[in-house]
Image: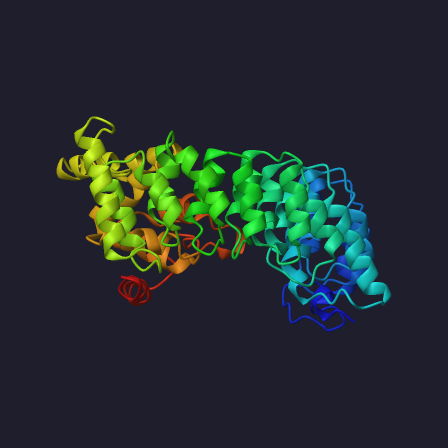
Length: 424
């Protein structure tokens, strides 16, 4: 009967602070708001008192009930429609946290009540409530598809993005429909970051011709991108250094795509492209020489400027600040806020003494521990490690490793050193 929802309900909690039944009844009937709030937060409190407190006139008391794992489902159902957003936020955090243990195939009354509460919270008028639900269930495969689809179509990107990026329950058809509906950039970027995107979904992202989403797609090494999509991307890359930078990092470019890039870049860029794609079956030594020769001749004839490769300017600026001992957290925070991803990567490389390619791989690992280890090695604060996890590695919710209450790294130095060495 869904032990996850009842927790210790049905068992007597070993709570030495819990007053005797008669004293609890007195507090519930005539105690101060502070006393009622305290009692409502206690583990093992009898269900009848929690049910009573669910309609208490004091908001703080109802918040305490919403966060209590011993609160009966009937009381949770009442709190799901509470007028206070804080109450509903607290309830959403509790219910969503326990959702991994739900068996949606169950047909009992308890399961039905739980799902009813989840549906209510997923459709809540407050963005904060819906966001909590989306964050906590984004990677679960035991959710009703209706809840997931509802969150995926949410107009607020903070709600839809976690589900769009991670949910295993969204089909290719649903993703295509969402893309074609004209979603905003943030939602499109979330889809572009999904693991193992098919050629069709990648093509749908590309056809929107959104620079940031296209860059996210190119940074997604697990995404499958067809040749016709690369043709469209190449056209944008001619005008966008961000898109071109993303293309340079790919190692699955087709020969026709490489030739297309060679028609508008200089020697340094084409050399990087050829190096990363040298294993391509149709790219033999004669073709490599021909491509390099054509680019060189075009540059010499004035057909192209020999510009620096994408990221070179970012690297040079990072090196200058590092040399002047001005590469600090304030600079990094501003760069992250301004979307200067390559600058941050080069800055972290300088601060840790690691090659920038390794730093990039650690950030793109989709894992929190390497990113935290990177921040630690760069002698950044634990709080800054959270920003790197959120903004650079694009991790969310429970995937983020947070500092201790004292603001220190919660991983031990041995753990941090091990992950840094392992990834490096």
